Image (cartoon, rainbow, N blue to C red; front, side, top):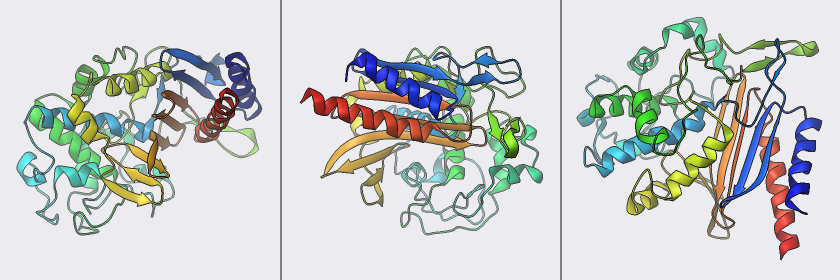
Length: 346
């Protein structure tokens, strides 16, 4: 299969599956796939393009983890620093042994403000706390600050959004900057991600996709009242697909962390299940005792996102969508087609 046929095959799959979003795939410096489908604005019928900005939900937890790793690299704190020693916030029921490492690896055992294993609908959160009031990271604290621990620190992997809110607050306290400004300056600028940022839902810049929630009988609504008004340390940044690929390049070319700290950042720190591990803010897939995939993902109402780097082939993929599902299917199709292409080359 030629590169042209690969691109055409993915475009046909996106159209057939009514995918709304973009796909951008590079092998080192060679562009393999650049495609988009669906509408960024359905009412005005403004189509998505490869350079459309999309929300990526939890896909940006890796930015939070890098911000912390940069503070570690500058000796501002360490991975073994206790939460109580780097954040001036009271948590009356939290275990005193919680460290930065525990928060990064979802092993802190703290209560979450949204537990994906217990709660089905992210939108239910905003019935008691209006989403438009959550403008700063500290605004999330009342949702979990007084609650009791779920596990002993270090014992169990339990995906935790509140832990990343705390990491963002640590970044703010230790850097003297808002979390969003820190990421934009020390991560996005270093990677040339000039279109990416944390944008308020009531003030989205041009070329930004509106998130859509599809309902029965072909109806739909926007996600304006379904997610926090502005993204933060646990999710909600906006990126373009090419700029997400640029981010991976910046990480692996040591523009964000030095070589030693990059290696530690990407080390599998905790086992999630067979073949799946977690580093700092990044999922890691292993096959036959070899790492085959570093990836991030994000899901919110009206948002789904997958992005990955495959070290054995030096391929990088970014697939954002402004709908609640679809990115995973496109990702698997890209992986399938790339495997076919690799087999033919062999």
